Length: 263
Image (cartoon, rainbow, N blue to C red; front, side):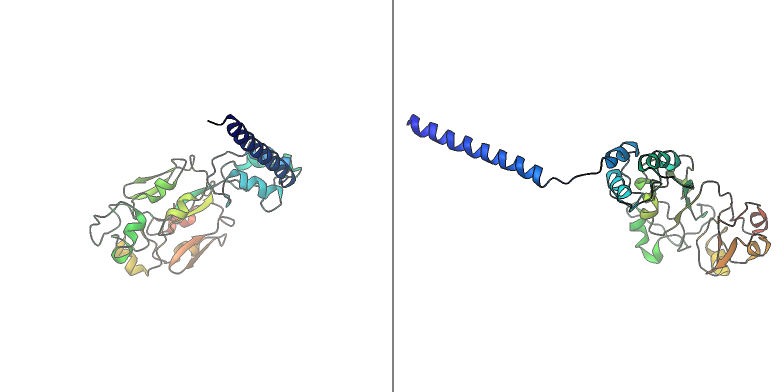
């Protein structure tokens, strides 16, 4: 064994490694991307759930967007007003008003109220079930299928299947929007936490067809619209809509609804 050759090889390898290390260190400093220290501060006060409810790929993505002025200081639905106030302090601005929102499922078609056209034996997944005949086994093509895709998507255990339909726990919900994206029927929307009157139906069928499919579906009779003194209710596409900004929660619509579909 040639000792000289071994020493030479070791020197070459060591020298190469040293050169690469120095080069990478210099390149790292030269091409380093400077970050605003406020990003780290904002990231520290964000919840860290990385749920994507803000529309960005995680809390650090939102922090960067806030610093760049691309997102509002109250853009985090999970943190709510307390976190918005802290972020606003870091940014040196006012947080502004923040409405506490929660998810709401626009369907009351429980097992005893909604009809079924057939029995589904496939994978217990709403997306898969919706691909079957008539968009699922329920007689109402707009109704909750009850297989819990929204439940699986919720990172806060705030939604569960009760008697065949999804029900939201308002106090556990963080309005991240995961359930909204998971529902193939588009039955879930965000509403103000304080909103007391909501239409728990999304069917656009005519009254006769609705009654044949579900005992509690909205039939578009407009009786709620007629008694609303705040003009907060409109009936479009055979379904009643309540504008939370106009609604005074007087309860007149709920009392007048013949189907009892307004909560």
